[in-house]
Length: 256
Image (cartoon, rainbow, N blue to C red; front, side, top):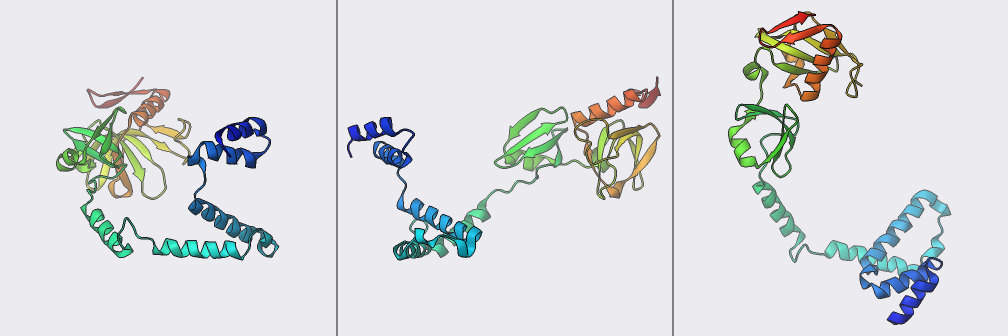
């Protein structure tokens, strides 16, 4: 086959004769031609898939002894191959050394941290950090500066009166979004808040109920985080629907 014959086949058989079309395209574009490794791999997958689905009813006439011999030789070759000219043992040892030298991030995805007196949620830590502040603005930074100078946010150290806090239950009960007042013994004091009455509350406001009563949440039964912009909006919306507003200056709940 020459170039002119290949072009003629493409023009005359597209898309009627797929096999001839493929042969012509492989001649025109050699990179399209399937390697022997790829062909054997696909044949093996087809063979095993047919046995898996059809069992005794599989059509074994598609393959002969030479196919099986080629497959066995190919599999043995895979086991003998060396990684970049090194033995398998050498490659494994080098991989262990590489893994030992990898920089592991100090903070994991989902952590809330304090850095330069601001609060951030770790949104990504694959090759550096992506940090998102409480207003949803993100910034990307390398590990070094953050790992050396940031720390985990802690309600016992970092929460201030009037802060809006998200309390995530450790026991699959209600979650809360609250306005923090103080810590007292092992309890978190709140001015007011909303509680979820369903696991399916993330798509709207319907599954949250506002409570204007001052109260406490047990410290050891919840994970506490700074509230996100969406969570703060939810609290304010439910507060407004119930006829209340928060006076941030006087630190009090007002009934209007």
